[in-house]
Length: 106
Ligand code: FES
Image (cartoon, rainbow, N blue to C red; front, side):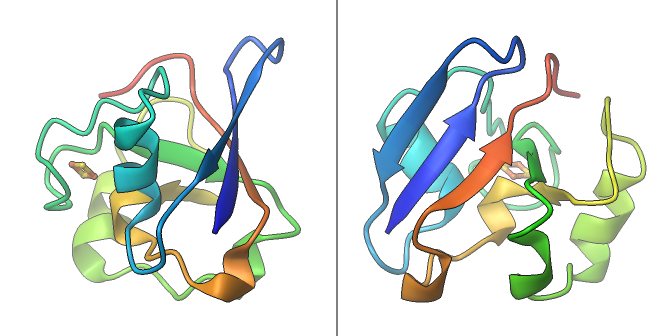
């Protein structure tokens, strides 16, 4: 499942092939995408895997669980489409999803 990460400076992007069933965060970490820190390893407790999902993709994703929603209220540089990448399981229908990485994480 392809995922495209746009760097905070807007100047570069990483296109990553994420195995089915992995999370967006796991795909980013596997490929060393800069700016996805993921301190807690996917537990939805650190908030350092924050991404802003491009608006055309955001409605396709499941609603955030309460733990994710709570963290999204305190992440730097939030937007209406902010999500934790560790809470996005990559399904085939998300092929080509594009997200923006904030310039800093929690
Ligand atoms: Fe910690 Fe996503 S990796 S919240």
